[in-house]
View 1 (tube, rainbow, N blue to C red):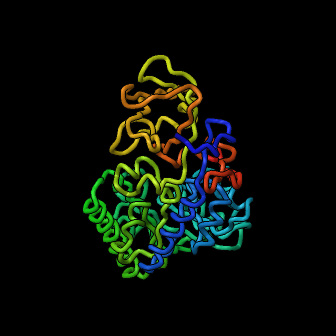
View 2 (cartoon, rainbow, N blue to C red):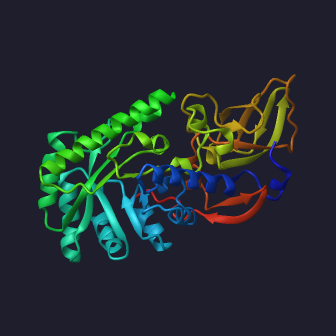
View 3 (cartoon, one colour):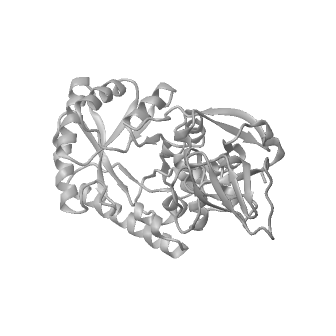
Amino acid sequence: MAREAYADLSTPAVIIDLDIMEANIAAMAQRLRSSGIQHRPHSKSHKSAAVARRQLAAGAVGITTAKLSEAEALAAAGIHKLLIAYPIVGEDKLRRLAALHQQAELIVTVDSLIAAEGLARVGRESGRPLRVLVEIDGGLHRGGRQPGDDTVSFARLVSDMQGLELCGLMGYFGAIYRESSEQGFRSAVQREAQCMREMAASLRAAGLPAEIISTGSSPSGLYCEELTGVTEVRAGNYVFFDASGVAMGLAREEDCALRVIATVVSTPMPGYATIDAGTKTLTSDKAHHREGFGMIVGQPDLRIESLNEEHGFVRYPPNQAELKVGDRMEIIPNHACVLPNLCDRVAGVRQGKLEEWIVIDARGCVD
């Protein structure tokens, strides 16, 4: 059950254990520093300037965002070194990018000629070249140029465009989340590094700049000693971890900083309980390599079997556990990154007590 100190919070309450989060930030920063790799953490996991400032204080060289609107929100909150790791397509977004280019130190990724031409126009009209990374398809086929001649040919076109400053390459190798063993993760990270290293060498051989070789995820950050030739990692989920990470062996329960406090609101029959956290709190995301909709801390016999919008259905052996109306429980969500986007603010707690409200500056920023 959740600690009594959380009785002051109205449930369902999304909380961040500040001690755990700060330990995660420090550990990743030290791990990457020991391997000579810079960190540009992804903000999609927290969407908060307060958390980003902690990451920058720990040595991050900048912050990554998924969308232009996230970058706008963080810039408005005082975070100015930003990588937008998403295609910028459309005149409306180019106008907004031009305004943001005047306020922040931007890097933008690109993988199409149409997008590159729009970005080049922003750079020319501003009088200051826009820094760009060519995205490589890391195997998910959601975007990026194909490794090999396709990447080099496209990078040459980008480099020749007035208004753009080619800085290097970006890749995302999301298939790593299919792994579940240390050797599987290490092998995946080695393949990731080899691809990026070979493409960087190809760019340099063609006389093209490859100052920044940006790759990584939280799993590859955890195995960064295998990232030979990579200059920076964009880990995001590591700041919180979650039930997926625990199931994959990347984290322990005590490493999970983002949690949900929920209250039992009904016990319709033995072995059945309903909590006040449903899909609008925990989301409907499933976990990698585990069933259910979150881990109930300290209660392995309890399982969140299904969710409605405002209800969570907990099942348990009635001869091994007992829940009563009014009981509280602490839940580690399946996928921590989606929960902050549902909140205006999250309770930052330390030693079981509320210390600060963490504003989610980029909540709802999906364009």
